[in-house]
Image 1 (cartoon, rainbow, N blue to C red):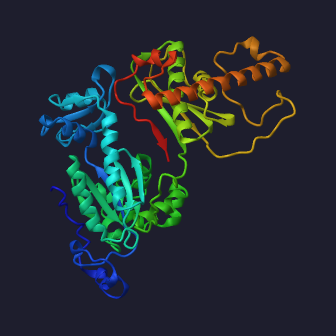
Image 2: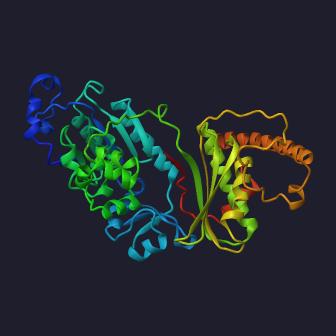
Image 3: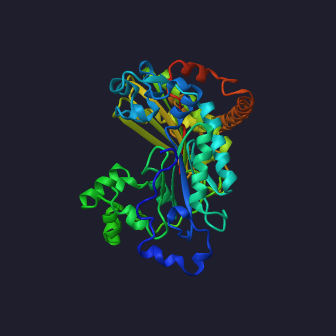
Length: 475
């Protein structure tokens, strides 16, 4: 289609849209692509780069054009698919699929473990093109961004801006699909309707009719569990969700039920937030999959320490400190255990929350059980006052952490005074470790991520899967 994706069928000069030819709307920029109608109200787009990682590989290696291409980890190291070209998708391959399964489905595919520095470079170029059109850009991932081109703010016809963006992105050597509507929900759903190189426009007033025939899973925020609950109530499309009784929805889904109904009716009011305006994520986490199972406690503890250090670096980069620590262990393809604990004070120091995560191993793991994935998350970033205590050994309202895995029973049974002294020594040691971590952060930022490695990192380097890590911030 080469950027010539069709407008949504409802965006025609019929029905309620006719009334917008008169009055104030007549003085707004009119779109020749929408029957000369003027766009009224918010205009929010979502630009989604098509099979982005695979597209960049083809940009750099034109000889791969037309061949099924998979970016992901190898089958020998329990890799997973990060991205599949559309030719590979025709065989049923999709992202997050185990590489072994993808290889069975598409044995003739070309494989690469990926070049993420290059992907970020191209992504930055694309985001720069969007910012040249409007300052209101909210990047949500390496290959997606919302943007606000509301008439009066962007000053031009929103549809033409989207067309021009598609052409400029294509000139970089990759392609994108764009959805345009009056809210983020509409833009997101529309961007998925016509891929690759699609441009789907939902004109103001056509939101409900656009959404109505689509399955409920087409709308973000509705996962498998919510879909199953809705299906049990006879609700399978967004139109049926919009017609549902809000009281019954609240009984079924809690407070999110009526909100989902409003979104299904196209009534969401969205704001494209700059990075400086976005709320802090609810959690920051890292995970690592290992090429072989970890069965020894020392190896699992080292893996937790390694992953905790990655989380700590990201927390400091974001200026966040959290109080809740979550340990995630995956034993096989279907079995995952998690455990949580609450820290007394918020921290970004892996010496502190990493010790808590290692302590949680006693709750989440039985010695000898094979571990294929370790994840650590820090959350609860809300500011809370710290109550000063007269004595260091006074009891706290909340447990400081799970038990320290290196603390012996004798140490746990020491006198309050002895334990207080050891607590002070540990706090001093933790602060020194944080200073060391901050120095390592700066060196890696200047000289590359492999400029500095601790023993915990070197121990895990050969054990980790070769799938490029996709670290997460959960909003």
